[in-house]
Amino acid sequence: MVRFDSDYMAGAHPAIMDALVRTNLELTAGYGNDPYTTEAKDLIRKAISLPEAEIFFLVGGTQTNATAIDGLLARHEGVLAADSGHIAVHEAGAIEASGHKVLTLPHHEGKLSAEDVDAFITEFYADETYPHMVAPGMLYISQPTEYGTIYSHDELKALRDVCRNHQIPLYIDGARLGYALAADNADFTLSDIAQLADVFYIGGTKQGTLFGEALVVTRRELLRNLFPLVKQHGALLAKGRLLGVQFSEMFRDGLYLRLSRHAITMAKRLTEAFAEAGYTPVIASPTNQQFFHLPNNLIDKLREQASFDYWGVRGEEYSTVRLVTSWATKEEDIDKLRRVLQHICQR
Image 1: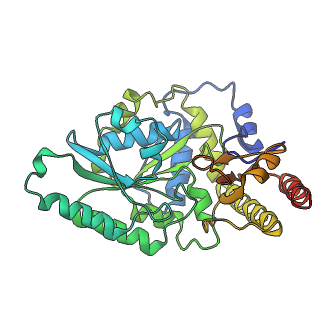
Image 2 (image 1 turned 135 degrees about the vertical axis):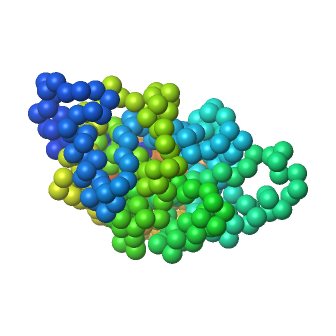
Image 3 (image 1 turned 90 degrees about the vertical axis):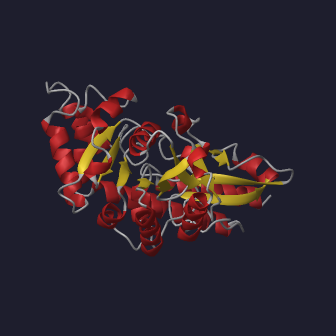
């Protein structure tokens, strides 16, 4: 069985595991007050070309989103997001649980347009009853999106400009940020992301660490008291060194982007295997998530030897499925998938 369900199925890259084992019996201060966490923060600041940025390490993506969004919003404010966004669909109401509404907008292959965001905020304040409603207090996007698509530099800048015009922060969910950076058509760098976003995070869980996300605050005045808020949200790891060790390893010599590029290479080979069988992606995703609309009988036969997810409900005759590559995907996994597809399609 070859598995393409998601990009967090494997444990951690061997270099990460080696570093954790090597430092396992060291005694260091807790809660991130250790030399490894300090080094990791310095390495990330260097990678984003922003020495004044504040860095926090949290355990998981949902915790990171919930903590940062709760800190960025006033009590009466909500967060703007695509109706396909992770916080709107797959976080079990974590944002609402902290007292903030997710204000959804229609997406275009997972992306929001600056025009739609501007129109929503403008129309909100044009309604004279707006003090009775949840105010749009920030904008949430993910890079890449839930559909594997990416925002171009110009699209990100347009969203940033709208946010600045309406005086709300732009927050970028970067659970898979490395896969966006490694995409062939990416016209932005990690430094660009840091210049455009007010707050964003660099995902580790889906990109080669055992766990962990690095939250980057580029405008410190927006999150003045984040440390206690991280603790309130149960996202503060007592053994903070475990996060520092992993992110130091990821950013010391470019491992983060090397692993990301590998996943993109595997995704290209995966789409080639489907193309040889006569199927092309339903969305032009340049990242590690690939979507196909397939006959149900093909899906059923394929799932006998490969695992992947439906994207939505199963249709009567055809269904959309998602296959995901990762830093841990092997070439032989793709080769086996290709052989299985060829065997099924030749019957």
